[in-house]
Image (cartoon, one colour):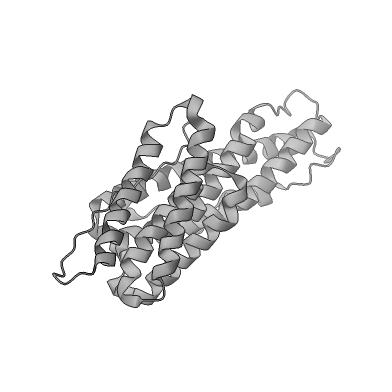
Length: 265
């Protein structure tokens, strides 16, 4: 479980290519670079003793980036900058780890993704890809931290001839957690169908690395669940006490609709 860590920082450089850029254009370009650099600094330099401070710094940074993005989203020519700000905001909200900003995380991710869809082929691939990944990755990370699924399953032993109420409850909890986790993993795999990933080696490497971790985490946990369910039904063929999970259900829960993309192999 400790190995299941998801961390993502994309650096972005903004260049003013139009000679007649306004003072506001210059200010915003400078602010975008500064805001992105500040995000990287907080994520890279924070120490455990500074955890609470860093959480608030991230939230303040996210609020600023979101406000800038909201101010730009009405002007299509500014969509790329707005998307970059939304990416910064989503990252900062996510990495703050504070439950009170979950709605803001969803809002920034959805707002940025809407702008990406509006731009179509002209959308900035890296920022837009991250905005699609942040919600499922954040969800997986949250569930992994909250439950410690594999650790719980290792404490269940039906081969000793006993099926304690606590063990059965653990199995039920694991099933519910996997039911929440499976759609997130499958959403990540669906994103791998996007051919734009193939044109960005850095993004492809990031996507493949974290997708493999997500799938390995899910498959190993679901695999243990299948083993424990099989143990239960072997040792308690009358299904007394009732586990409430059939072997077919456990196997179906483990099966994902898609494989890891071939370019990740």
